[in-house]
Image 1: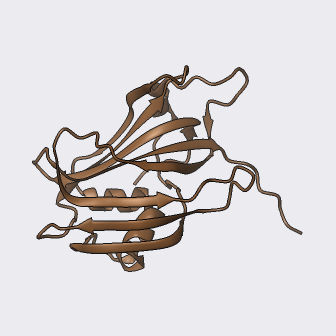
Image 2: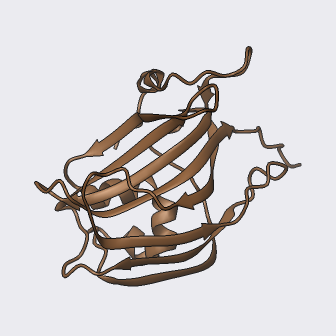
Length: 200
């Protein structure tokens, strides 16, 4: 999958202080998972309950740790016969509200691969190494438990992002059905990626 060009990010309307960079290489971190679904129809076949450790701005490359579970009660697995969607709401410049759907990454097919390819380490932590490394994409029904596992919030197909405060929504559902089987939301930030000092 190709990287998304920087031009798609101008729709966000992100406003920063004078002289601050608008966008560039970034570090992403999660503030908290929230009980909110952006989809109109959600049947709760799959649910995520999770907590995340606090991000330390003094150690920006230290990974956050996630604890929780992903419960999938469907009678068939989540695979590439599903759609998936990743929405980002942007915090307004006056910090008084959210700009809904600042970005929408829509995958009308191959939903499992789209999520696995775009948030690979989160997929690895929640579902397992075998899921990430398998040639086919399939999440079998069951309960997946994670206990204090470090997670890298990297998005390899989006190497450049505007810097800001976001409310993110992830959802998937069966192709040709508008109802989401899974829906989860979290608040997050993207900040400029510091240069790492070379050793030696």
